[in-house]
Length: 454
Image (cartoon, rainbow, N blue to C red; front, side, top):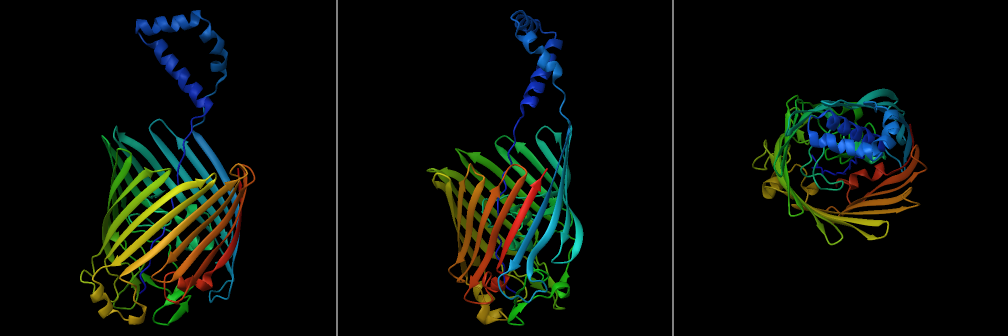
């Protein structure tokens, strides 16, 4: 079967402290000091009262109400996409859905609870569903240990739309259809433990039951079949042997003189069903991986490097045609703002197939073998205007070895904090029908989205 390349995006989280929280914290500190038996602290408080400072603010403090530990929000999103040419899938629409998201958070002194769920009507599949996006509890049983338990979105690594050491679940159907980038990263039922040892951070994630990617099955997009020598859309006829074994991921990170370093490890399976068993059914072969990354400021931008070694445990010699070979993957990238409001990101990715001679000699389809050194270059352009309310973006993939490409142009307009609108396209091209992007030419589509947040 065709070996797939993995792709990624980041999501950054920001935290802010409201003025009400600052006032509440200040009041708590003052009360603690007032109740203290320390005479010096009492004298200082008395001095502040004599100066009139405390009396001036006393009324404001008394009127301040305690913030609720509950936070609730929701949004409604309408999305539609359509193929630009004939496709063999059942629907001419690549995306047609009405989504309602509910976010609920509870903050306690000893734990935090997060719940996010999507009500979804999908007209492409003609079905209604409820998806639990997140449902987890986070707490710190020890001073240097944080634990998050439950359904959560896990991510790490340095790549932009390129995954090397991040082997957590991805949703490729969402990525190709024009859904928000948030949905590229899928959730898994996991336990994540983060411990802190001086300048080092150690992360360990355990998923009791292997959670594969949401790969293409033919229900929404077609894909190339080496056996049929053309694109197919088997949908429910695409049978895959599942596994209930667990998967482990680990990371050790630190920062030395402004450079962020990380080491990674993984034990589990290939995240898409690249193997074929003796019954001719696709399955997830066993695989482990290790790697490293570095991220540092350079000039006025950010430079990054990442490396990963994939060990295909069921094909150590590379001579099993029905099992993917081991690989070495490497990435370098740079991003900076070249002029005001215009940022440019560049990446070069290299994927080396191990035991290449054994691979070519055992290949079932010798005219469709991948290059020993598969190359991929990416460019991200992002221009913001109207006080960042209007964003133009383009992400381009190009493989000089496969001679295929994938373009993701998009426009995003934020009318205000409640209403936003987006439009874009997924454009595939290639000289051969069996390469990674070339096989998706019939999946080229345009899309529109409107989101209303409350």
